[in-house]
Length: 349
Image 1: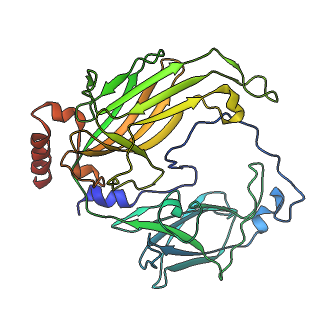
Image 2: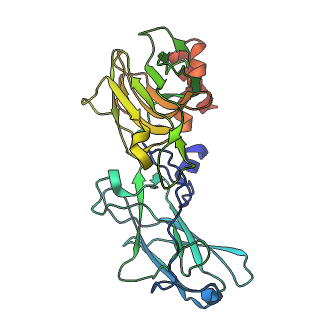
């Protein structure tokens, strides 16, 4: 395993980085006020008095206990400076820290283990017995940010999930943004080259249509405006399946449909959004498979952005790493096979 692959396994996972596949951009609706009468409320002046202990456990995607996982813990000391300590999970997957001093009002925790992916969205799509999101930020007091007190319990350790890496495939990566007419005229793109293609020749086809001008969408917030729009995503000669998986590494064998249509009408009220993000598996007409992160932005220049990984060898395996991936632009110079030959030669240097 080379250095780049090792670095991939050590990705730092913070709560502020949320990898939400198939999510939408919502309006900034006001947050509910903090309730100072809550039993979990601790005034700012008492923060430094809060005892800070933490108990955790690390498991994999099959709920197996993981020994030897590195856990990085950060907090602020009595001078307000950031302090870090590392601990390692035991045979039962558990770890703990107790008696942290100073102003350790909040802990930031992330876990890493060679050969594993850190989990961000939690076990929602990983067949875990518990359905929740991975938490990595823990407050022991409450302040202006509205955080409530975390209470550590050695009998109920916080669970952290990792996913074991599988077989890595050679994939073609495309990252591209394209303008789309607002009148519904389709745009087709090749995921192998990134080029705009003629009708029926692309791997992905996108249409967008603006249906109305701006109007108010919620009587309680008259300043929030919206407009009716629709988007259609399709695969010429093939099909697509929407997915919410955090690790979309194996395309399904069936269940594909030709088109996904998005109708975003102001009558949806707070359900209306001025852009949308989705993730799809694609089955192409040539028998190849791909996964795509898709974003549609209908206002302004009206464009879509995609990040796609295409397996050009008729395999449904869509798991890869940087050292196994070529960029779509390189396939223009001699084709896919030549691009991967150069990649393999570079890896041997």
